[in-house]
Figure 1 (cartoon, one colour):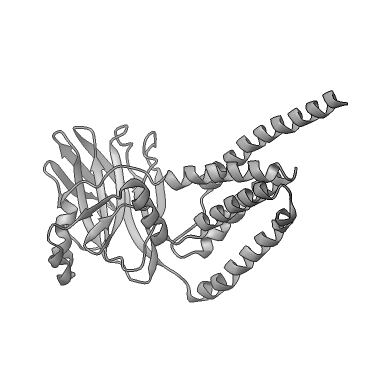
Figure 2 (cartoon, one colour):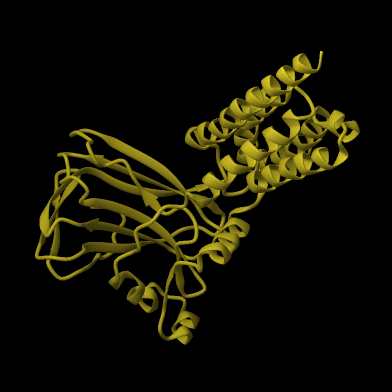
Length: 313
């Protein structure tokens, strides 16, 4: 069980107990079984870190662990909130993830779910902690972010004079969209995700209870299973943007695929300069896959052009 002294809300059929430094959870009966609890978080924390270490392999496809934040009387699931990777994991496996918070967030809610018509979960460690931004890093971030944008603008400046102008314009608009997606704050991404998907949240039935701003008033939010689902829509959208932008710029300059290939890790590093955002190797690989697909299309177009010129001669 977590170190902080706070009670767990348990669904029917779910029970937990300490086992040394870890915990054991037992579920009996069908349906989604879960245990949930609050975690106090400072308003200055941009992230919550969640760490889970297994003492025994969980049933395949049965374990889900979530960490969501309360905002205006609702638990917001329009951003990343799930810790994944338990399937196929062996004993002593430890998984760690950081989850973004936005201005106005209240306490965080941790939930363990068991999906196997009952079963047994053994954790060697189950812990969460808030991560606050260092004041010195804040000053560096404010200086480095505009510098990075200026350097990228200078690198892609030759496309302003490229012709046909329409293709250059579309390509540069794609580049601007990539940078906006990478540098948008968490609250902007959450708002966009809600517009694109209809939104996911658990809200209090009696909003006036939020005025009490106590964890007890928010306890009804813990008595429902958190929804399953990923936050991958923006990852896939970035792959499309990288593909389309590489294709457009590649029609103008042969060096475009290499420039876009370099841009993928650069934008991931730049995300560390945005509050609540961070780099992701998997995101960079998805971006690179978009560049690779566009490059294959460009190679075909370049060869077609050469064949056409050869036939004309």
